[in-house]
Length: 83
Image (cartoon, rainbow, N blue to C red; front, side, top):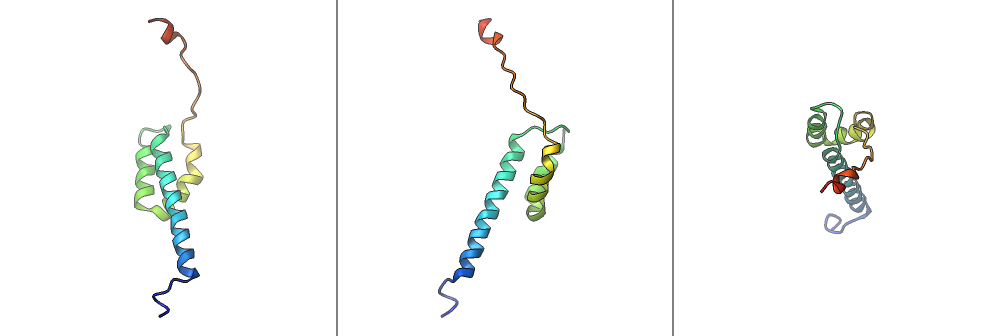
């Protein structure tokens, strides 16, 4: 009967799996959304995240900050005035 009724161990593993899935989705979308300095760095990070998810996610979240392009806010106000 112990196999049929869920216990707290099952709940712990389900919540930790959901937490891990959230990290995976965040890392993948963050990688796809940002620009990187090198031409192939985005492809390398995506491959690392998808095919080695346990290590790839935490490597990306800890090391990708130094390889991302800095986004600068520089609006072009003259573009709308020239029409």
